[in-house]
Length: 426
Image (tube, rainbow, N blue to C red):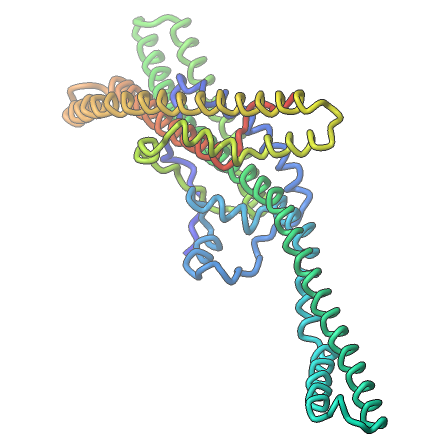
């Protein structure tokens, strides 16, 4: 059964999560650029299932739910921008492969091979040293025809081999473009997915704050009626309520924009109603497996920016020493970026663990407040204040979780050659 999109119950960032949002600014700009391309293309959700994809995986991709672990495949098979890249490259490669295959299996080549075999049989039955001039002439003519036929067969086979080799070279030369496009798009969509979840949970906090502000405004009205509050107290409470409601409206607009972008980037139409899933907890084992020195070497080997720089320098008129210096500078920059990414992972892990511990303590306080409210020991306003405080701590922990997940992703994308920040070889 297809599920409709949820609008509440998500995790979200605490106000202290500004660093996470700032770090995501560059990728959101990239998403915006990719969005411009996406809206100019038709959605491809009706794509045929590739032979190498199993039915269970394909059915999950075809349902009405966008899950975090599906994002790379959703981009691979449904993103309009990536499909345009494939459509501009794949037909040329496929055409070369098809031409080579058709040449090898053509009826003409089969006829030539059959004729060659018949000529060879005839030659085997002839005596090249016959004293008869007629026999020698027939043998020579047959032998010439045989050689001509063999040359023709060899020419066709060599032509097919050359075309096939061209297809292989084209595939190798374009693989970098295809991979870089896929990786960059997937990285951008993952960051947008996390940003959506953070914004959605921020709305939950604003909703709780609005409920608290409404209760405070009602309390201020009641207190004013008995002379315990001033007109300014009431106006302040009403202003706080209006501010909370405005924040909700602003977040709703942000969520709508992010949701539409996510739909378009993964092959849906902008007005789809697909459910957007949550971000899983960070896998700490992936951090334990990190080896900065070895990983840096891998990042340098796979760096698309470095490969581009090397290709550019091949045609440069600069001296060999200048070229070597630029390459070494680019490698040093990757090393610096990897160290920064690694330190970010470690810092975010510490923040995640501290926030998780604090959340456990906050949970005990929240449960106590609920029991007191159920027993009539505290009023609704006090209960809402306690609930809001707990939500704040919960979002601090949840934001730390999603921030760490993003830090791990940034590090692992760098291993594949994608570093979102910084320019090389300037």
